[in-house]
Length: 427
Ligand code: HAM
Image 1 (cartoon, protein in one colour):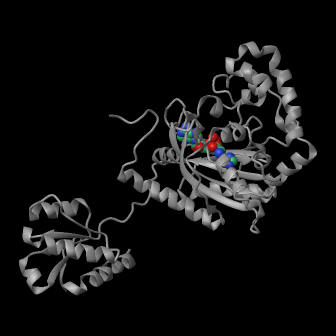
Image 2 (tube, rainbow, N blue to C red; image 1 turned 60 degrees about the vertical axis):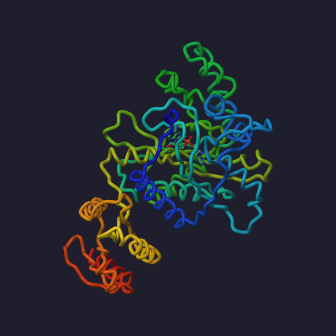
Image 3 (cartoon, rainbow, N blue to C red; image 1 turned 90 degrees about the vertical axis):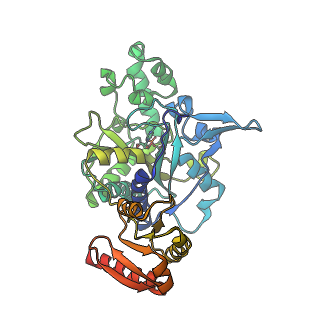
């Protein structure tokens, strides 16, 4: 049996890296005062059709959709924003005193895409959504949270690209200009772009097949169609980014692959030199209108999603090793099979005191147990034999220095804690 295409197992050594990344993200979210939200992994299909947009690649080609046993159409979430906004409306979070509502999430997402480096069918995102404020300072906050996160991980060659898609009126004018621009030569484009021309011409700019067509580069820029209000908003966002010292590049062709966006949108890429192409680590933007779409009051929102697998790829390419999780504090070695019960008892006592303890479960001889302790990087070992059990005292051995001290049974945990804490102070 093998796992399905586009999925992967995360084994313990690799999972340690995930813990470091997730902990760093959660800590930072707390610093910025975002609280965690956990939504279901599957939702009614309609949520994504209406939220993400029924002309997007995600909805038309990439969703894992199935009928449940009662015949309801269910979809494994392809992204997090639609679910978070649904929950915001469902729990009437717009009515709570604490505004804007600042939320973060992490977890698996599902898209039926062609698997390749940095693109899976089940992948993990960490994201935030700030709902309820149209202060451009919140745009800068959300973007700086993401940038700060990459910095925390030690990633340096990171580029922020921003654009504004403007409000509804600006987008409508831009849409008409795009149709006029592409219509005469649409036969040179792929079948999907033919469909996009009248349904959603902005999507042509984002086409994976035709991205090198010269008409895409020369397409009318959204920035020339922004009305006064949208332009002023974008200027303020940029000014706030300047205030917090975040550099960016404005790219008027940045349109994003989901339909809910307006005003600010952005992507953060890794420019690691080893990559042929840049890798997009993070994408996000504003989505005024999504809360209303799901039955809530008129409410602005902004957020981003970061791909965790992509971070891991980039960290590796950049040669960054994350700090390892602490290993084994103490390995209990049994001198005879009769000492087993005592080892089990002592180990349970140590673990109750949060001491990371382990013993042999494979019937190994003493020498092999010692080897196992070394393999597991145990900082201390205790040998348990008949004499030790009779005298209720054990030799505690520091594996780094070889030093041994005799410790009475009832003081074992306390002495270990003392020695381990002493080590930390010396570090
Ligand atoms: P997105 O750009 O579709 O935006 O995805 C965000 C990030 O998820 C990407 O930049 C990438 O790192 C990662 N990602 C996407 N697809 C895959 C895949 N197939 N395999 C591996 N990683 C992937 C969203 O999903 C929006 N919900 C972001 C957002 C939040 N906008 C506002 N709020």
